[in-house]
Length: 76
Image 1 (cartoon, rainbow, N blue to C red):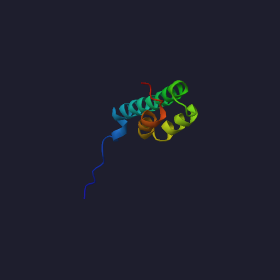
Image 2 (image 1 turned 180 degrees about the vertical axis):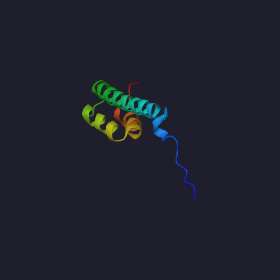
Image 3 (image 1 turned 180 degrees about the horizontal axis):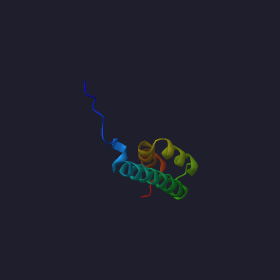
Image 4 (image 1 turned 45 degrees about the vertical axis):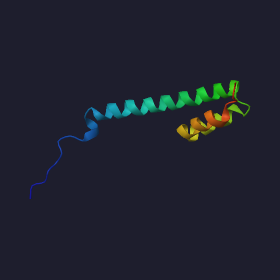
């Protein structure tokens, strides 16, 4: 019974660089969102800014939605 041995491992081709680049991009965007939320909350929120930064760190998409809905003071 002949065994088939793969000639390359998938992450040894160009995929590893793409996966790493994508992971770094997601990480950088997450850090930028945390800093943006913190600085914006210092100016536009009556709640503590560091708490909003923690919420965005723990749950990025949900944290941003919550911040926009209840965290920012409404200016009319």
